[in-house]
Image (tube, rainbow, N blue to C red; front, side, top):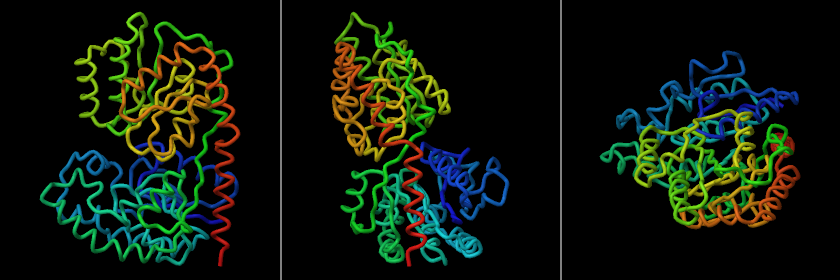
Length: 410
């Protein structure tokens, strides 16, 4: 098949795992003989070849202006970002009509207008939306979302305009199939007004060869007990909850030393907040900030820690990092937010705790520390479950069949 893949960020430009996943799927599809074109913003570090095109009027080298709010946008810029970008629309339609792909994939346009989606729906090719979070709900069905970097005086204007144009956009895209990565996310889309028959759940998958269990890993815990967090550093991912739990452990189990390594990166303001929080709670000497690491190094990190903490507060649709930890055999504690319970079965493949509850998280940590058989059982079963249900090859197999089905559907 000839496939066009529309996405607002693409490695090496990325905010999280979605962009890495998109790249991995695209590379695998190419390895299987498909002709895949990436249509994204413009950036000096993007591959320079015929398969990477830049119809999206977005300077990826200045992505911080949009995603981190490093520059205040004008009203005109806010309208292009959140209402509709005609420059992007025209360029995307032109390229899609030139390529004439068998299928166009529209993937994740958070904090950017839905112009690429409308272009895909109007171009002379079939389109499928890949929605690994709620970006399509925010773009088509709610107003005022994603405006936290918009000046207050502009916010009401943008929200009012969104309410006027979104019904038009919904009409254009009403028959575009939508792939979501969890039943939780499917239900969220249905509750927002999307027709159930427009949706299909395809759970994500990970490279189980990269995240192999460490058969030499000791079942006994180390001293000190090393906790691990790996995700973006922003409030929704809950690193601050892990720090509060670390402080609670000092009170609950003063005889045991716990330390935590935080893997991931984020906005400077939030990282400074975490440092100050740890100082105030007197646990800064028990925290190490490790930054972003690639997949191979992340696997090594799982092997060198005792318990993995997945502390998301926001409604995580279906998390790859969670699956990666399970695949490596490290005992996992996750919040029950969003689609996490679709990956974790409580006390069978890990432990579930309420989101935003550091005391519950601390108690769950102590439960794993004190119950040797539970640690062994959840680690072993998690590894088996990931390999049976959520391997990357099985994920791409499912996608490939679905893509062919929609491309050939008359």
